[in-house]
Amino acid sequence: MHTIALQDGTPFPAFGLGTWLSEKDLVYRAVREAIALGYRHIDAAWIYFNEEEVGRGIREAIDAGDVEREELWVTTKLWNDMHDPADVPGALEASLRNLGLDYVDLYLVHWPVAHPKGVVRPDSGEQFLSLQERPLENTWEAMAALPSTQKTRHVGVSNFSAAKIDRIANAVGVAPVVNQVEVHPYNAQTDLVRAMKERGVVVTAYSPLGSSGRPDTMRREDETRLLDDPAVARIAENLECSPAQVLIAWAIARGTAVIPKSTNPERIAQNLAATKIDLSTEQVEQLEALDRGERYVTGEFWCPQGSPYTLESLWG
Ligand code: A2P
Image (tube, rainbow, N blue to C red):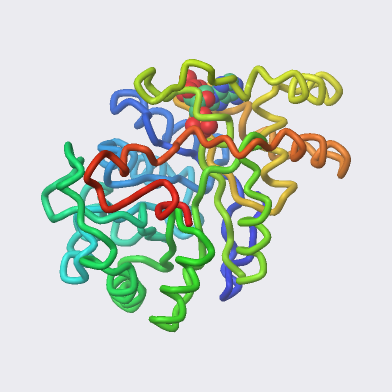
């Protein structure tokens, strides 16, 4: 399995299984199957409400002898209502209990957005805490203390801009090892990927297939499906592989880690096989040229009327 070296040299498997929107009754089997096939990186989050099933798949794979815990990379994420530094260690404990694991390999701040404790999904703009009220620097200081507890090996962030990363890293003196962000050819994030490289922060690309499993409530009417893009199809035809495989190979060719989600056994296997596909520099550039700054996960849900967050402040 191709790995990327983190700042401290730890090998980070460049390909993993995403579990956002994976249904509870399917995700256990998906994780179990994925590990049996050779997946060595599983991406979870408290807010996906399926950590227990993901953990069950991991533990059964270990018990069956398919993999040793040390060979597996498990990531999970701190939810927005647990940004108070006093709540951070307990939030990690809660995820470990859900997963049934002694430690995770990577714990991420899920969003640079805060809610009061217990407000899991604010239903009005007034229910948010601003970053002045709940500074990211303070949350990050609590995160940076976690590896010494042995409950997580590394800490990182998700959905952060370079400016926000600089702010927390300078304040605390510890940089995140990973920034997990939405990256695919329609949202190539070339500047952010470069900025992360300069800082030695590895990018993990989420929604690499264009997040086609999102509920209709999260879709725009004029949205194009990335998996149906003609340029992607052309390259797929040339390489005799599927469009999804082209997108996965593209992410790896650009030096990012990638975590396509699937609960379908055939697609789980197909996606793993994509790690063996090499794109030419020209093909990588052709896909990069599709960039139109189009996020599928827009972040609009953090910016209702009355919220202290705007799209500009969220992504800036
Ligand atoms: P399924 O779980 O039924 O396979 P993303 O990782 O960008 O969020 O995309 C996930 C979506 O893409 C899910 O709807 C998933 O459906 C689908 N998907 C995953 N792998 C493939 C594939 N190889 N070909 C087509 N669709 C895929």
